[in-house]
Image (tube, rainbow, N blue to C red):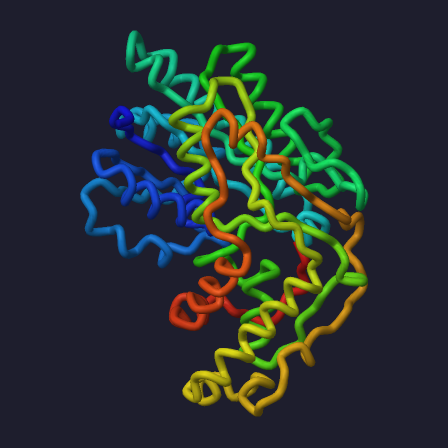
Length: 365
C-alpha cells in the first residue's frame, strides 16, 4: 500500500485532469486532492461537481502563473505531490494565437516549479523524500513520424512542429532543469492522443460524434490519413498513478494506447456506432432529429474533407516498452471497447456537453 498523499492537481477541471481527480479519489481512499484550475474555456467545473461533498476534495480557482497564490495553496494544504495537467492544448488555437500557449505552458509551468521548489526546500527527512512533481506532457514534442519509422521512445529527439508542441517541449525541459539544477524530485509522462468521457467538444472524437448527432458537417483535415495512437483516458490515469508510485525521479515515461488509426478510419468508426445506436433505440431520433441516422441514413454522409492544418504532423506512435517493463503498465481498453463506451457516455450525458457546444470547430488533433 502506498503512503498517504496530499495532491495538488493543476488543470483538474479539464478533460484529463478531471478524469484523473475522479480516478484518484476513488482509488486512493486516504488521500486528499486539491484542484487548481483557472476555469478558462476548456475547464469545466461541472466535471467535478459530484466531488464537492467529499471531504477529501477541494477546488481552488486560480492561475498556475500566479506564483504567490500557488505557493500559498501548496503550503496551506501541505501538498506533497503535484500533478501538472494545466496547459493550453489545442493545436489549431496555438496556430492562431501562440502567445497564450507560451504564457500558460512555459511561464505558467515555470511559476509552478518555483512554488514546488519553495515547498520542497522547507521539508526534511521522510517528508522531503516523499515529495513529487509529476509533469504531464505529450507525444507531439517528438514531431512527426514517417510511415515506416519506429515509434517514439523516451530517447527520441525532440522536434516539435506546432506552437503548442513547442511550448510543451519547453515546459518538459524546464521540469528536467529543475531536477538537475535544484534537485526537485520530478517525473514526466508523454502520452498519445486521449479520448473518453468529459472531453471538450472541439477535439476530434467528441466533435465528430456530436456533429453526427446534430447533422452538422464533420470536418476531416487533408486526405484523412494522418495517424494517431489512441489512449483511453482511464488507462492514462492508471499510467500516471504508476509513474507517481513507481517511477524514478528525473525520468520520463511514455504512456500509449497501442492502437494506431488514420483519422478518417476513426471518424468512420464513430459514424457507424452512431448509426447502430439509432437503429437500436428509436428515442434517439426524437432527441436528435437532424442526424442522418434519424432518417435511416448514414452519418458518414456528413464527412467533409477540408484544407489541411498548417504543419500538420502525419503520424504519432508510442513505444511503451519502458512503462511496461519498469511500471507493469499496459492499456486495458482496446479501441473498439473504448469507442463504444465513449459514444454511450456522450449519449447519456447530453446535459454535460450541451452547454459547451458553440457550433462546429475544424479540428483533427
